[in-house]
Image 1 (tube, rainbow over the protein chains, first blue to last red):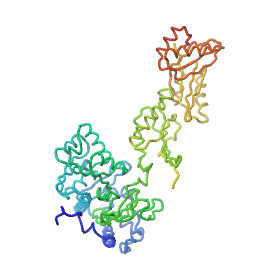
Image 2: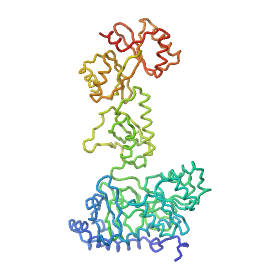
Image 3: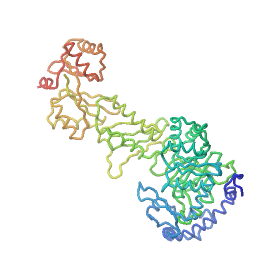
Image 4: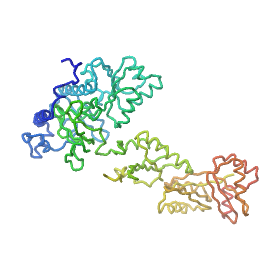
Length: 438
Length: 143
């Protein structure tokens, strides 16, 4: 097959009809569940719940299987959930473990091959072809955005430039010297590269061959995407991946730029209410739950991703019937979602830490004021450096501005005297959500 | 010639004033005058007292963030219009006033103000023969 002349990287999988997808999913689900009995974790979990692989007769029977959580991955750290012996595994990726035990994901050679195929399918879908020059600005190493895109881009047959993260001037030199046409970058870094281009007098339209940008891994709005496209003169495509599901290549926008197709030959998608864990209808927001369908080393059954999204109803004009996911709307755990922006309390803490006048105690309050959701950040003034209201207010404004730069919304900042906020006893309450729920 | 003033950042909440005043009482500090400037969210409690350095130490030791600053205390003639005449002198010299309050001590009117242009204000005080007080002078008047 001459792939140069096909719109599909894998026509057989990409053009399946809904009944064909579901037939393949059931076959693969049954095989996966049977294979999971090689995992000490899953074997015990099935026994504890009185279910056996033969109970999975239809796709709906998936719901008999309990969810797998990140905590399960931590509890079985490092290899306790694997379904293949270690001597058949050729690579592992691990999370940083900033909030507990790190998590480890193992891969056999077949897993890596399929991962590369999945990423290649995504890149092909947005027009990448042999002859393109692909530059990856992701960190390499444990972070899956590096090697994941690397192998996928090679699989497409592009010339790859594994530039890795940072050194923006060098990135730009590669653009101009190597004729880079496709770039993978997080949205904020794409903006940063444009700023440096301006400083260096580089016009992306005139001086580079850039045409496609692959973005993701960082919450961003459609407006931001349009701005990036405008600045760089490219088409920018949103992507979704997570290390538990290999990494990049799980879901990707097609040229319609309207939702990310999730590859249903690789994953079964469920969207559940994060409270009741019951499925929600297409179009409704809920937590994304994924079951892997072709993994050897570490298949995961009904993995709660904690990402909030929805399945977009209706058919995509591109012809692919693989479901489309909306942009990730936030996290069902500690992430704050305000005005559609995902915010971690740690981001706010890091900004506050930079001000020597402030103490370590702070309180984030979310409330609905005149049908607008607002954030107030109260922080203790550790040292009184002035007795002028004007200077105190100027400090509040400066904090608000720096917070905006970090979290993209402008909170109201209130300085409070030392000792007036709840003291951290073990885990301090840092977020009070008083918003009206709809 | 200036006076030491202590400023404390306080929350608009019941019980905060008594906490601050209790610390000063325990340290044997005599207050000469106090004022509270308040906004919706917080207040600044300003204190002039007999031993400002000791008062500052006591407050900081009790975990109450305070700041010591220098303000001008001008003796006013006890007649209608003396405040206006005095302020007019500073206004003509182009000196901005951050805040101002006044009180009577031993029958004498005293006007306290803060400015960012202390050097210039001192010059104006001297050249116009205004009576500017020091902390120790206030303490003696309060005895």
